[in-house]
Length: 89
Image (tube, rainbow, N blue to C red; front, side):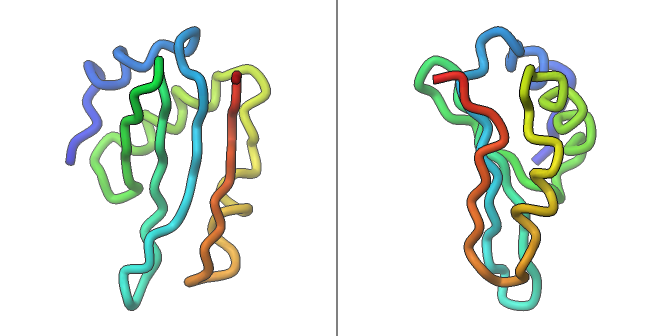
C-alpha cells in the first residue's frame, strides 16, 4: 500500500466525518491502522504504508483532532484499543 498525495487530496478536511485508530495483532507485533470516513465511505490505512506520515500530518489539521491518539492506541501492547481521534457526526 502506498498513500500517495492524490489519495490524501481525496480526503478533504472539510468532508472527513470521522477518524478512528486501532491495532491489529500481527502475532509478534501490533500494526496501527487508521480508518477515515467520508460521506459514509471508509478508507483504511496502516502505519507500514509509504506515505503514512503525510497522511497523519494531513489529518492532524482537522479541528479538534486528538493529538494524543498514538499513546491512546499503542498502549498496552497486544490489547484492543480503538481510539476516535476525530468525529464530526
